[in-house]
Structure formats: C-alpha cells, structure tokens
Length: 503
Image (cartoon, rainbow, N blue to C red; front, side):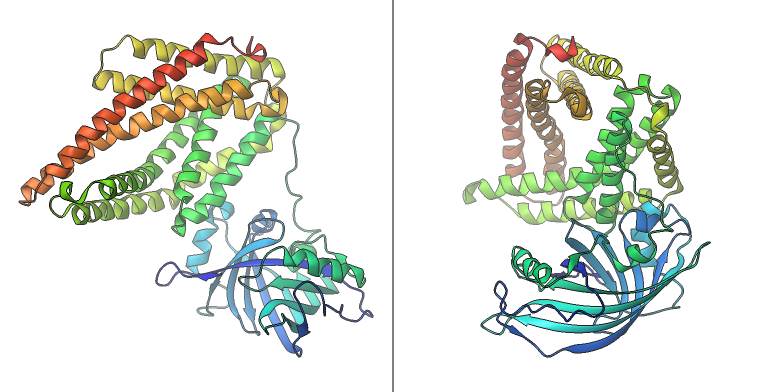
C-alpha cells in the first residue's frame, strides 16, 4: 500500500518480502503452480546502482535501517527502509534531486534519533544485475514478484570489503494476503534455495564492519530501558511523519523510562537517574499538548455526535473543529521543535550510556522487590491523602496524583516481569484498572475547562452556547461516576493481601 501524507513528504510503501541464497549454477526456482500462482510473466532485466549512506560507525545498520540512493529500475530515487517485522519493512521514497553525495534533509531528519547529529556518509556501493518475474494468479493479477539478483558490493570505512553473490527475493504485491508468502516460500526452498540470514544486501556486505546488535545483557533494568529507548526512537520517526498514534506511543515510552529511572534510582547512580527523569519529564511536556489535543477533540466530537439534533444549537462542530485544528497545529510544531533540539539529542545520548553499562546497575531480586514494594506503598499513601479531601479542585488534583502513582506501580511490575513472572499479574492488572478509571476522571475534569472556554468564545462570537453548557454538566456527572467506580476498584484492591513477591 502506497501513501503520501502531505505535500513534499516521502511516499511510503509497505514491503513484505523474503530473501534466499541460491548457488550460481542453479536455475531459477519454478513457482508455477505454487499457492495462488498459475502463471509467470516474461522476465524483465534491470541494472541497479545503489549508494548507501550511514554514519561512520553504522548506527543505521545497527538499527536495521537502510538509506540509499538508487539509479535504474522502476523506482529509482532516494529510499529509506524501516524495519516493521521479520518479513515486513516500510519504504519511504523521494525522487532523485540535489547532490548525489548529500542525503535529502527530509530523510536525514527522520533518522536523527539514531544518528544523533553524526554526519551521513557514503558507506557502501552495490551494483545489482536483476532479472524480475511477475507471478500471476488465474485472473492475471500480479500476486508477487520473483527477482534473481547477481550482486557486486563494496563497503568503505577503515576496512574495505568487496563481495559478489547471488540471491533471490520474493516480494508480495500490494493487497496480497501475507500468508501467500509461506506457500511460495515452501516452493522456493524445495527447489534448493536457502533462507538468507541477512535482512538486506547492505547488511550482508557490511556484516564485518557493523558492531553486533545488542542482545540480552542479563540486567533486568538495562534490558527494559533498552526496549523503551528503541520504542522512543521508532516513534520519533512516526511523530515527524505525523503517523497516527505515534505521539501517544512516544509519550508512553518516555513515561516508562522516566518511571523506571525514578522507581529504581537506588539501583543506579541516583544523580544521573534523577537528572534523566527530569529531562524525560520535559520531553513528555513537549509531546503532551499534541496528544491531549488529539484525545480531547475526538472525545468532544463523539459526544456532540451522540446528542439529539435538537440539543446541538449553533455552529458547534465548526467552532470545535477550528479551535482544535489551531491547537493541534501549534502542539505539533512544539513537539517537532523539541525533537530537533540539542537538548533531546543529549537526552538520547545519556540514555544510551545507561543501556551500554549494565554491569553498573544493581538489580538483583532483592533490590527490584524493594523498589516495587515502595511504589505500592506510595500508591496507598496517595489514596489515603486524597480520601481526606472534600470534592472539588483539590481532590481532583489529588486523584490525578493517585493516577500517576498507580501508573508508576504498574510500570514497575512490567519492568520486573522477567524475574517476578506471574506473581504480580493480578496486582498489576488491578492497579491498571485503577489507573484507567482515574485517567477517565482526569480527562473529563480537564475537558470541563475547555468546554467553559469554548462556551465563552461562542458567546463572544454571538453564537449559542447552550450545547457547551450541556456537555459541561455531563462532564461533571461523568467525573463523579468515575470517582465512584475508582472507590469500588480501590476497595477491592486494598482488601486483598499484597502479593508475596512484595513482602
């Protein structure tokens, strides 16, 4: 599927493919019939000339990312390939333009979280003699493409590396059921081909030059932080491309990192952990308005849509659309400025250092258990404090603190899952329920203020403000209902015994 989100943005296309090694003297595997394939089109021959770009220490290759400038073939241009799963990648394309040795700024910015400002240089050169066969079904529709590639490659860097090999590739056509790949795979392997252990031609050529990918370190915290750092970087690209839910997922990763640093700071260098937590709080604050605007706009449009037509007085939808469009534009610009900042780059570098030195982290079972137990105790203390307050703004703020403590306790349980196993599952799920309910409570409390402002704006523009008042009243009722639901959930959670793992 090909998409283009905005003017001047790269065209995006999902690729589902598998690569195979095949001896030079073996014929191309017969794939008629195989799965839905009943015919094979005449071959097409192309010569592809590709220059690959990376940092001098191959940071993109380590992340499974490919950036190249290709000449020849039907899709010549600049290509940025991002890993999605074992067989699937997303390719972003731009037409050939500018200097051949300079990566377009639109692509260079997308990988900034990986390069951390390092210069992108020519890392390798590949020349491919390609013979392609379109694989067709009984109705003549293209199911997939089989390519037979003879590749000559040269990689630069401190150790020059030359290689020549043959590989074949099956790439599904857009709209083809991914399960078709398995049926074609069986036919190719039966014909003598072997699944390639290389995710890309570049990775095969540069294997001796690229530092090995990080595996499990033996440190629960280091591995957890590494997972969240990967999520942060992956969604950084999505935020820059305005991909749906990317802001939310990046914010979640930053919150998980921040929560982990604060909860387990006694297992780390406390000063470093506190400093990074503060920087992650800043990042979350920069991403927050974009996500909050998105959620609130969807909530209010849904609520207005559910009202009887006779209760929607005035240009309610238009006024809300105008308000949230302006808010969303400003919020997105704020998020992108943060991602382009030196402060953010420095934060990523500092997070990398923690992940790279797992031996300096003290995270034996005793330390981890004590940290999770502290998060449980702080949650209970926050609930006790909130229960002493009368309904009103102070109690609303206190319940928001309970929500944050619940989220931290839940994240703590997620962090220690490799050593706690299922022992915290029930407690963790109950805490999540409390967090979710109080999240609803907080959302409707915040929405009330927005409705008040929208009502004032409608009044100032001589519009009818009745509907905003109606929704404001409903939000008050919704907050009270969420509070009652929380009280029941907390009673259920607190009357049960604490998990033995926390004692």
